[in-house]
Amino acid sequence: MVSSSSFEPSFRTELPRDSRSEAESSLNSAANSDSDTLPNRIDSIINSLAVDLDFKNLMKEYFTDFEMTLKFCTALKDCLEHAPHNHGIIESALKSYDEEDKLEVETVKKNSVKALEEMRRFKAAEELFVEEFLVLKRMAHRRYESMQGKVRARKEGGIKGNTEEAAMTLFVPTFMRNKAKIKMKKKLTAIMEIYGSSATTIWMLVQQLEIKKTSLLHSVDCVVTEGYTLKVGMDDINEKLKLVKPIITDLLRETEECSYKFRTDREEIQRQMTLML
Image 1 (cartoon, rainbow, N blue to C red):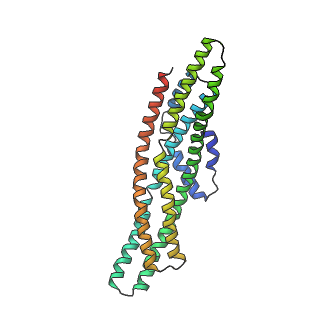
Image 2: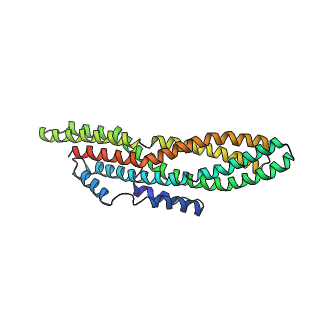
Image 3: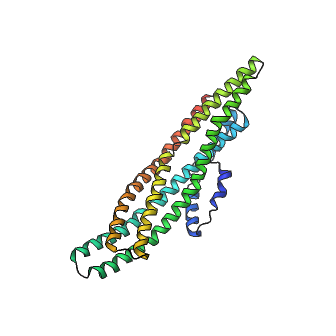
């Protein structure tokens, strides 16, 4: 995850304009879901914490990333809701093929024409879906990985340096203040690490969906453009579709729960920060 300042340039992804515009529109449509006073309230709490400026900036960046992840979940849900329509096209093709195959009347010609027409419709719709999905995935995942890396680096390196600094302090009152500050930063870093992993399930499902969708689209492309035997191709497509649908269902559930889950997490972090004041 990263801050909005370092994240925004990645919106300029060099992909077809329609797909990029739709993805960005989905993200922007979620932008006003919270009150403008909430970021100010969180900033006020962070500014009041007895930690150094760099750590305060990291905390602000972390909360900005929280908001961007919420927007990503909303945009991803909008994108995924197109999937059942696409699946309906391919299921119709599979059903027609099976019904006509059983009749055994002009099987090759009739089934090829009707099934291939549906496959082409699905391919066109699915390519647009996959493009939009990958735009969203790339934009958000870069941000997620970056933020996680910063938190890990802070945990592994920052705390050690602060401990050494505290150990070198000669005056007891100053030493005690530094010790309390280090303890607070350790706790806040642990909180960011724990709650920063809230989107892990979504990222795992997104990765799985990308692999399965790409594989499904490849099979359809082989049937449509490379003249694979229709019977073999249809069986392959049917099996791959069965693998894709449960992932879509799980992702839709996760994105629907994302808003509540992330807001609850954010409130808990805010509460814990308030207790440190």
